[in-house]
Image 1 (cartoon, protein in one colour):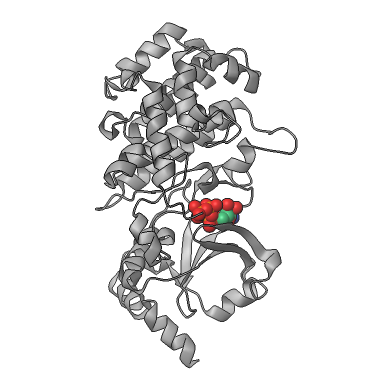
Image 2 (spheres, rainbow, N blue to C red):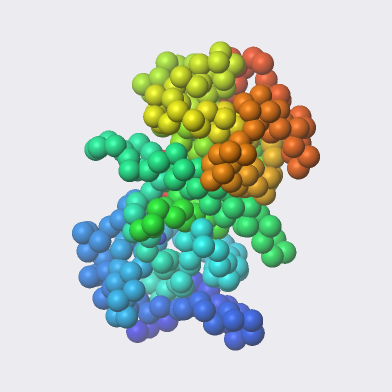
Length: 374
Ligand SMILES: Nc1ncnc2c1ncn2[C@@H]1O[C@H](COP(=O)(O)OP(=O)(O)OP(=O)(O)O)[C@@H](O)[C@H]1O
């Protein structure tokens, strides 16, 4: 009992309780779970309940006494200096209510490391569906486009939320979960990444995952919403090509998918690859428009990238074309429409450096100097 109380205090429990009682705007939705409740739910953190292991900790499946399925994130290490920030983020995140964001249900603070409790999303990660090793994916081009649109709208929502925009910081296909209906749910942002920075990782400063990391953020360490836009661009390419973001099986200069993609676009080899992946004959305009959009997201300079709202709107527009094919513009029109669209930065479709090898050097630099946490 004494230990639990000590941990609860150490983990900012009093601060959270105080915040809860001072909010009157429906904030009571966040639940503070007891350690016992979660032990029962996970069968004492049984190994069979492990859903996955990330660089930051372990995720367990649990079933609450009311039969609700949950995912519990247990981090490896806690940095005491970050507790206040952690509690503030828990409060912000628990207020987020978007159909394409994994809901944070609450937390448990009376354990050595605080535990975060999320709704359980049943159908695996987007990564697993894109890179399915057994059998072919059941998802159609329309599904992929919908999933991309849902993800973009969730990120646009986070960027525009409340007084402080929430930057995801680790957008990648393993952080996009799919539910029973293959609806996208963005996970693993905010509080879950604040916790476990041990001292050695602080010196790295730049956080992110190889292949998805914004080169501008890597060089400047200055984080903006546009870093999420870059990483989302990589996810779009992953969907289009069905290839992994970083792959040692590709030759050295195109190991990084973004670099590979840009070189394919330059050499006009893109369509051939996409067509091999999707056996759809009449969606060429959409493939090309999504490719142009991805290219703009991958612009080297953050300011040349569209913002997430513009990306989401463009994907939504393309989806509508899908539903009403008779209003599809001709290929040349759709490409020029995309670059001329008033809501977009007119520069963005042509701002990739012509020198693809320059980009490779950049990426190789990044690999060499990154102290990768996983
Ligand atoms: N809410 C959830 N519902 C169902 N499964 C989940 C949920 N959250 C996470 N998972 C599973 O747990 C795995 C590990 O998640 P986690 O976010 O810790 O790691 P990651 O995203 O693979 O890596 P990292 O956190 O280092 O970026 C995920 O790949 C997913 O399979």
